[in-house]
Amino acid sequence: MNIIERVVEKLLWQSRFMIFLAVIASIVAAFVLVIIGTYDVVLVVKESLHAFTTVEGFEDYHKTAIKHIVSAVDVYLIATVLLIFGLGLYELFISKIDAAENDSRSSKILVVHTLDQLKDKLAKVIIMVLVVTFFKYAIDYKYEDIRSLLFLSAGVLMIALSVYFMHKGHTEEHEVNNKH
Image 1 (cartoon, helix red, strand yellow):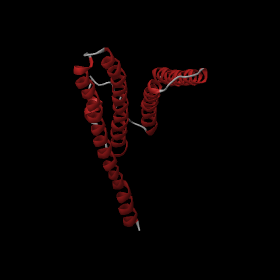
Image 2 (cartoon, helix red, strand yellow; image 1 turned 180 degrees about the horizontal axis):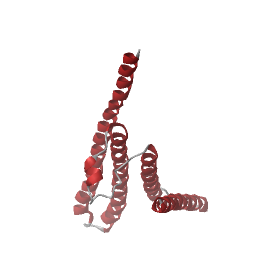
Image 3 (cartoon, helix red, strand yellow; image 1 turned 60 degrees about the vertical axis):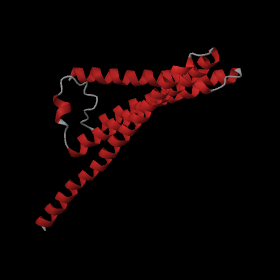
Image 4 (cartoon, helix red, strand yellow; image 1 turned 90 degrees about the vertical axis):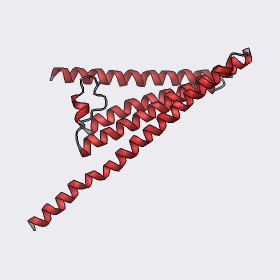
């Protein structure tokens, strides 16, 4: 009975390696998104070569450029979420990433020791994705009446509050960690 228990426990422990598929998929997806975001920026640069020929061309280019650049930032942030998620899963389920732990130049943003740290890092980046997405839609929205401006200001206020509380939580966490 003891042998069966040890074999089952060893199999259960080794089953954590299936998470490696999620790690690889997250890293590959992040890479693809970085390529997509870079393509958006390349389009802006390519269009800039023709944008300054007329005033109307510049105005159209200006709106298009902002939209593409904000989209690129949005895509880069989502790629960051996937990268943090993939590396965090690896650290939690497979092994520590020694290169990240020992690199004195890194900011340790990709180092994850607990599931709560992973959730916290992901939540912060996801909030930034939502902020950028809100900004992207606010650029295209037509503000025709006072109600639409009121909705815009309410959205900006909610974003400001979420960023404030996110920063306040980070500051309090930093103070608690410094006391220990």
